[in-house]
View 1 (cartoon, rainbow, N blue to C red):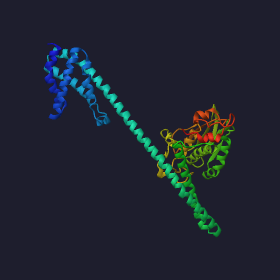
View 2 (cartoon, helix red, strand yellow):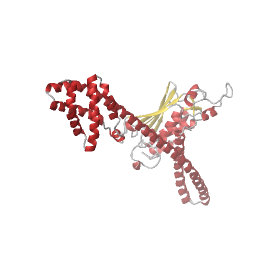
View 3 (tube, helix red, strand yellow):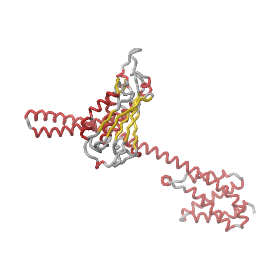
View 4 (spheres, rainbow, N blue to C red):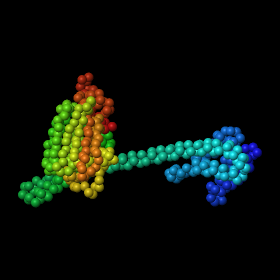
Length: 424
């Protein structure tokens, strides 16, 4: 018998066996048998012509059939169907044909099934990848919307809180003046505590406003000549009392480049360094040591702040630079901005990163890990560009177009830096 005759002999038992094996229910089986008949006709055409492409249309129709649920669950029904059909073809051939006939037939049809499996597998994988890509786009859009919502909330909340806080602060100041004139010492003590709370709330609101400015690319910088050593001296004086209260040791080394005259926003750079230093103080136990050092690199000044604190695990070293990125359980944090493991809104380091990156620099942290017994410590690295002129061409490259020139030799630096978008 020829292969075509063998296929005709196999047709009825093959369709009956495959439909009974793979379809449950009379309604489902009827539709499936119709598809199997179509597949078998194309299989015969492929075998007789030697062109396996005859099966491609029905294979692609089947491959397009999976629903969104199938794709979400990672089901690959068509690949399974083709595999099972090939296995059932071998069983039906053994039962319906002689051994020699079965071998002749299988030698002809198995390459066709192999081709069919390759077609549907490739198409299913492409469909799956496209589905996952679309899902990722949707997730990214949702995350962007959520981030915009958070930024909008921070901006609105900060500005709405600032007005009543100013009123409270003003009335508290007037009450303090009245209490001082009347000599009511107990009230003075209560007002002092109120002022402490007001100052802490103002710090939080100011941080929220800064985060909003950074998120919306509205942070402006006032470039002026500064010396890093001068900023470090100011920091040392600022934290002197906190360091004494915590019985910590603050060491500031002189380094090559700390007396270099560079252009930057002194207030913002001071704020960034202050945030990192306060973070080091907060997560270093009493009697610990904090060291400020640095070095001059090609085009940059590197400032390092090293502590002997609890350290940061590798998986959290990027998290701390995200908004509200606190480590550990917030309910276990001690109160106060400078106490050991003191709580906070988690905005200081994100603001620092925004300020440093707005200057064209970068910040990162290195730590051997988190350990509250061995205290491996952490080292924060801050890179600042060594701009020695306010109209350095690198400013134009990093922060946008320079302001219009007043003359060939005169440029309004303040207008330039205000009009630019340094955070972009």
